[in-house]
Length: 424
Image (cartoon, rainbow, N blue to C red; front, side):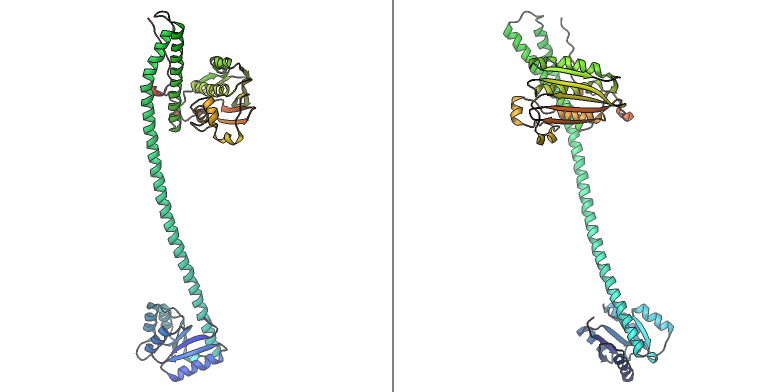
């Protein structure tokens, strides 16, 4: 709406048109009135010019105002339509408003004030309807965008779900392959290790020193290969969440002492001190003894591997009535601060130069972290280059698992190999 109101007055009675124009002139409104006498002229003007409001006689010669309003509204004419009628009939008023009239006025009641009030109200209502229509259009556009986004999100969700299913299937296939491969590798390894021990015992006859040395190398490398097979399989089953715990009562003092005894030869070979401080008032916990030993063995052997002088210190303490803490500290080469976040990643050693000097698969710490996790515990590491590394494992004194996980792991292909040799 501009500063001057453009009014289209449609009435075939010249006297009535004059009365309306006079009232508008006295209404103190800036208006410009275009007068026409028929519906056909009105339609032509509406098509060629923009108006702010239409004053329409209810009874035109060729068409009544009610049908004309319906026609205009159907054709998209949205400006205010004020109907002028010769008599105040309530039913006519209702029909007009239903058809789309903005208001109506009985001609005998035309006055400047009433006409100004009616015009202002009609224009105010029209502006409100325009704003509402604009808001509704924006809401519809927003709803359309939301619908499109929801459809896209649903498409992505289905895609991710499909990819997850494929990953799960890939994990399953990989686990089955590794289990089968493990079995196939262990059978010849069992024979190699067994016969190398028989030969080393010299029960079949004496060996030269060179032969004895070669047999020891065969046994050592075969055992290393077996440990690698076990590590790969354990990691695969941990990733697939298929590794279960065989819970028993475990004496941690005995576990630490026997583990250190097994690893003492490694420490002696590097002139390192293996030290233990056992401070548990009650050393008995409920856990998987084999997996606890695996955690401790990996941490201690890793400490020995990266320590050239000094000691490896194992400490057992009670951090709470229902928690125990296992600490493995060494005086080794340490780890750079920026490499600490990657220390538990599988198949990774933080320094390739160190990897060449101290070879390994990079699986030990990844397996330790996963095992500690399924035990309901935590593991943290602190280190400074040249000053050593400390691993702290916190475990519940008694593991609580859902009933379905309290099952003995009967997958023979997944069990570490235990040699039982019989000689004649």
